[in-house]
Image (cartoon, rainbow over all chains, first blue to last red; front, side, top):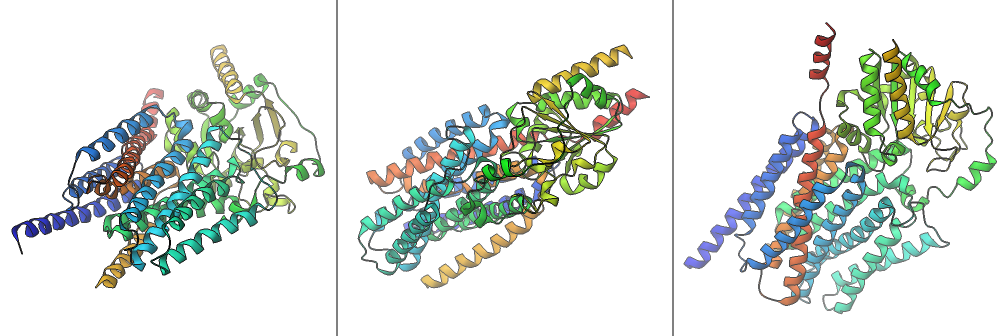
Length: 473
Length: 106
């Protein structure tokens, strides 16, 4: 072996060893996310892993110039830093969708560059890997951009549907798969077919997310997360890079688990979310379905008296809390009640909000200790001991129809049993139905009182009333 | 020989997916948003592939695609890790606070 070759192979070995260390640090870091106490340390380890991999890669035999790499690192680093510092916690779902898009476009471009450089000389295995990489990367990129636009409000959040939609989507998908298959089997396939496949993947991503409503975004974001991971793994196969295979598999597994959990929490299958066009039904249910009983409303002063004379209060936050930015006032109210020795907890439904864990992050930001945040299964048996349940901007996740109305579109979805509490206060802007567009039976229950108005304003009035009565006492 | 390499790759993928499944199941719903941004940052490891493209032999098309890919992946690495940490910093336990309150009451 010549001295140069020996040097190169030593560098390759060092790079591979760096990747082993990275894989270990990534897995350990994720493992430490199992508790809030160790999570930050875990992230440090994962960061160290990333640094190790990047430094190791600079030893790669094909890396001959550094200036272009540095340019990319600078642009990306500055953009990433700005996004990280300026994104408010309420915008976390959009930020996540955008980052899936960035990850996916990086992977797609790597795949396209590989094809461009080696077209015509790609063996079956490489072409398979590049095909999957670009297909998954492409649809994840445009799909995530669509999710971002819907969450940001640039596009309407409601499902956009048209006749023959599923047929159109399926034919494009078939077109993509046939193109990839042809490119794999016939090495002499024309190069335009590859670029046509790339274009179809981009279009497919848009069409895939078009009919999905904003309320279903937790599933979609998790699913796109999974695709982005799998695209990363495919890149690993295409470039024979083991760390990409490992990290992609970890990300893919995580996204898949989260999307399955979200689907379970809505009692729907992934196929139903993607092809169902949920939310098309409101026209039927809102009119046809008459609920017996009448609506009672309370003024905020009356409601405040009810709350301050309770022993145990549970707050049920929903997406409406994020919309009206009410999390800080919720925390203030909880503190005031705590001072009066009233027991306050929070009931978190798995799909409350626009992404998995959305409500937890907002309440944590407001300073609510995480041991007061209760998961659905833990809090449901407790509702019968609760004096007042305060529903802040949640609707479908507290609808008893999911338990007892077989004709309801959300029948079978696990919900929070708020109606078991002695009194339920629902903070709501108006009587408009929730995102699923379904009439809520809860509002007609005898123990349910509505407090109309902007949630943040109403809660502020509760806080003022509680303060005033504390002074009087 | 080529095929052996690919089989090793598939094996790594399967094992990593199992490990990932196991590890991620241990993450409580409380931390699902930070989990998602953490795995997103981790999967931006595709940065290393982009680096090889951007720093490789000179070819305008390849280098341009590589630089954009490096920028997009770096954005996720930096943004993903920073924002995950920003979120995790906010999660605080209530025990210390409760003890303090009990003292105040006494």
